[in-house]
Length: 161
Image (cartoon, rainbow, N blue to C red):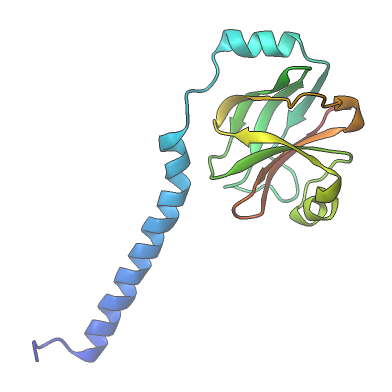
């Protein structure tokens, strides 16, 4: 035997597995930042905001928002798309939804999801513009939501009418 005792081998195994888990978690958090495309510039955001029919506010203090899942800033909704002048906590697989009622919890999101419209992917975390699919009637909904599809996590929402 190489002189390593069983308790020491067990401790090394546990600590190495813990570090592997921590590295994996850190990778899930940082990978979206590393592969995110450039955020829209101020001129593009201003043009989008000027065409807006509706506006709302993402806030950090919603029920299921927390230190790792939040959004803040002004959301503008117009005939061409939905734009955020603000920030989102980074994360993987964010989707933008329109909902017929305001939600601020994962349970409410899951309950209303069949009545929602998935608009598209959110790929940037410091400002974004997500184009609207053709034929979307913004007046049929009153809330815009950012949701993490991979982990079924509520990020943020804004009531816009």
